[in-house]
Image (cartoon, rainbow, N blue to C red):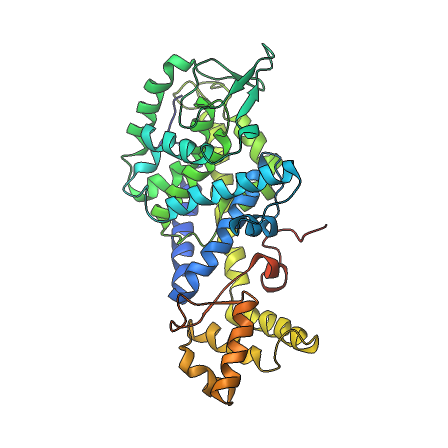
Length: 388
C-alpha cells in the first residue's frame, strides 16, 4: 500500500502544497462571508447535492427533488425508484451524523469509524440493495452492514488485498493518516481516498464510504461547514476521476517513481486533481452565494410568483430582508412591508408554506431556506434540472 504519503522530494510537491494552502484560505473565506443563520439551510441543500452526486458516480440517479420528497417520507410507487430514494435518505442520514461532529478529532480514518460509516449507511438500505453478485462464482452475496468482507475480490483489473490482511492494513492506514499536521493532512486526503478504495474493505458501498470519509476529513481540516461538496466535482469529472484512481493501483515504474510498492507519480497526479476539484467547488459555491446575484435571482422568482398569483406582491421584500440580515424577527415583518400586522402575517405564512422561509417555532426568527425544487432558479448549476 506504500507510499501512503507523497515524499518531501516528490517533483510536484511544491505546487501541491500551494494548492492545499489556497484551498484552506478559500474555504475559510467562503464560510466567513456568509451570515451564520444561512449556514444550516445551505448545508441541508448541499447535503442533498452531495448525496445525489456521490450516488450518481455509482450509476444511481436519484434527483434531489426526489431526495427531498424521501426526507418527507414521500416515496415513489415504483419499487426501484423507492429503493433509490431510501438509499439517498440513508446517505444523507450518515452525512448529517458526520456533519454534527461525530468523527472530529481525526477519527474519520480509524478502522472503527470506517466500519461505522458503512454500518450506518447499509443498515438503512432496502434489502434489494444489500446484495452483490460474485462475477467469478456467480453467487449472490449478502452485504452485512459494518462487516469487513470475508472473501477475496477483484474489482476490474485490480485484485484487492486478501480479506485476512484487511485489519492489519487498516491499522497501518489509521496510524499514518491519523497523525499528520494540517497542511500535510489536506494533501493526504486524496491519498487516503484511493488507499481505502484500493483495500476495498467491504463487499459493496466502498465508493460511498470513501467519499463520506473524505467529506469528514475536509469538514474538520477546512472547517467547511458542509457548505460545498467534493462529490459534485468528482461526478462532473467522473471519467478522469476513475482513470486517475485506477492509475494509482499501478506498481512503481522505476527508481524515479518513489520508494514504495505503488506508483508515487500516479498518486501525485490524483492528489493534484483532487485538490483542484475541491478548489473549483468552493469557487463555484462562492459565485452562487454572491449576495447581489443571489438577491436578483430570488427577487426575480418572487416577482414571477406574484404575477402568477402564487405569492403576494410584497413577498420579495421579506425575502430580501432575510437575505441581508441573515434572519428576521417576526415582529419586524410589518415594518419591512410597510403594512399592517395581519397582512404581514399572511405574507409570512405564504412564504413559509412555499418552503422558502423556515422558523424553529411560531415565535422564532425567520430564516431563508433553499428548497431543492427551487435550486435551478436560485442556485443554477448546483445539480441538473428535473427532466421528467
